[in-house]
Length: 94
Image (cartoon, rainbow, N blue to C red; front, side):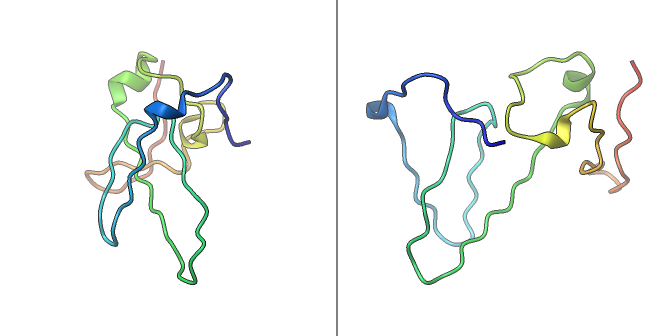
């Protein structure tokens, strides 16, 4: 399920960023964000890197995670790995 805003959004405060090929955009997943339809004849790719701080995960700190199943404790952490050695993340012991 794709999350949607639960109230009217003030579009006058909207910021649209048009990135060029090879550019990176970094922001918190807690920010309301989206994309626009691709009306060109070229394929557009998006690669997401989602980072977590282990102590924040353990202590349940940070903004609610509404759009990313990778961090779902009940579903497991099958998509996460350690950046230091690329080993699969097994979760945390309470």
